[in-house]
Image 1 (tube, rainbow, N blue to C red):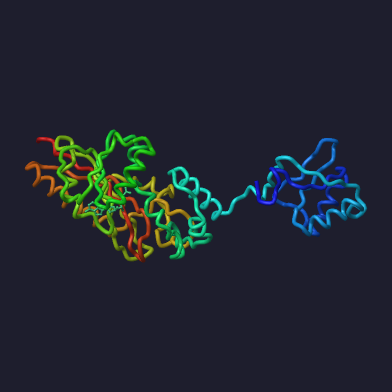
Image 2: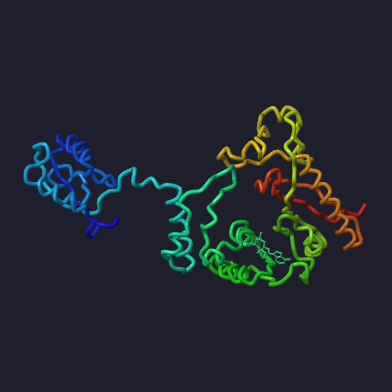
Length: 350
Ligand SMILES: C[S@@+](CC[C@H](N)C(=O)[O-])C[C@H]1O[C@@H](n2cnc3c(N)ncnc32)[C@H](O)[C@@H]1O
């Protein structure tokens, strides 16, 4: 219940239904109507109009009670559990952000403080899928402890992965991940390897490897090849920042082989999507973007490189194929964070 209300009640002027609209207009003009709550029927058939209970209003209301505004018959009463008005129930994005963060912080067993309240941004600029916040927001120490595990947790919680090995060398991140695994009840299905992932002593266990480092995860590729299951292979999800200058409008999009469609299909318009540059600043979510020639070239070079690593490691032929290229977000002008889903399998004996 809002401040100033007494025990969940609000002050109201009740009048006969036929006078309600006149009284409402009068209270609005006099800035006495409490717009946070709806007009509502009260026992006896009257309509109660919530009024603001500021001191000035109280004085006026005393006068109103004695003579009645505009000579209308009305009485002062209190409404129990007033119903919020439509306008009051519509929350601004800033209010939604604040209450979501508050819910998250309380859910993690932390307390919501004045400092956090001040720290939450009230406004921001949105450019496509990029949000610009003022640099003094989210400066409280608590924020650095949260949000960790955005790869590991979705794999375990939403993708129902049987088991995950998480590599992390920052001990704050390790601690936060440990806590978040427990909060989500999935700690038994995750092994955290605390240290440099390039030193990882693990092999032949994984169906999928997420290489979530940008600008490049290349240093982790040899380890990723080693942890993939030797007998069946799997899929690598490779994050990378790729620079691509804007394409002239006449250029056709390059599409990974297995995403190519027959000509009649392309006329359906399903791939007639805006480029990330066009989306930037449009305020819309960036849909699956066109695969730029630069992304395709990088993906093909990476696929060839990784095939070489696997063949060298196992001493037998492997094949790698591009399953999908996902544009995650615009990272800087003409630089995009993309993810290559690369299938890697030992080649079947001829
Ligand atoms: C973009 S975040 C990845 C998401 C994070 N692992 C999670 O699930 O929340 C990159 C993380 O990789 C860690 N990192 C970077 N290089 C590393 C390395 N060589 N070995 C282990 N962790 C590394 C960083 O400390 C950072 O927390």
